[in-house]
Image 1 (cartoon, rainbow, N blue to C red):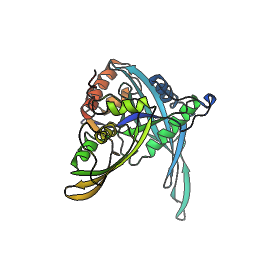
Image 2 (cartoon, rainbow, N blue to C red):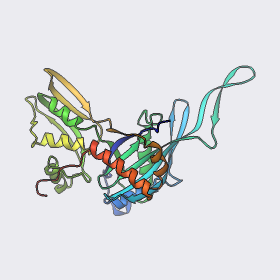
Image 3 (tube, rainbow, N blue to C red):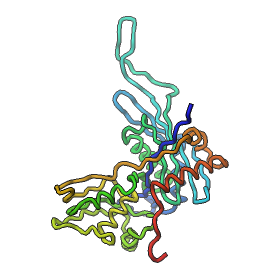
Length: 314
């Protein structure tokens, strides 16, 4: 029997600060990778969980199996996220017929998948499991658990995972307009990878203390689509995953007025014959075999989300 491929999606790790922080005793912002790692490790504690309801089924979400290791290109950490069925309602057979009943599972069966955090690039590789990831309940549940973990460590910032779109998806859409009249996007500016296309925008935001920036650019005559312009830099930063939600573009495309919303689907990778290796090694990244697996995953990530070219002054 052929070994099954390891399928995964790629997300960007963003740090989002509280809107108002009046006094120091209310907590502090997350500013370093070490602090991010503390939150990720804390989320695997047995007292951090959340529940969701889908139809007649009640689920519990938990994270476990924190592990970390330096893969030669920066620190990588891993956790396992699980969705357990704790209660289910439905028809149950009796001697006379069928009646409504609620079944409680103890211990509850769980579907699990792995998350690998490549800290140098602030990229997260998430094992794709269709039965668990048909909707975004897994991500909202993980965010809620990360919030609980951060609060328990007296951090006020939140950690968010944002899909990194397929290669050039946003920029290709940007360039497809013969006249672009509107570009709307919300950027997040914690620690972007430096890039010639985005560095001047990032530097201006950092110098002015701006960590979130909502842009709604409009011009019925058309906004600039030149590679050295502000709209292009904005689209490039969104392409890298430093954003919240989708990007809206309006204008003339293929001779017609069009509105396109893009950027909400994560880039997906595939490595043949690696699934069982990942599932067996993700909870212990320190073996030689695990490091070889990480190297293969890192190569595929680099192919899908290429490392940025450095700014001109480097």
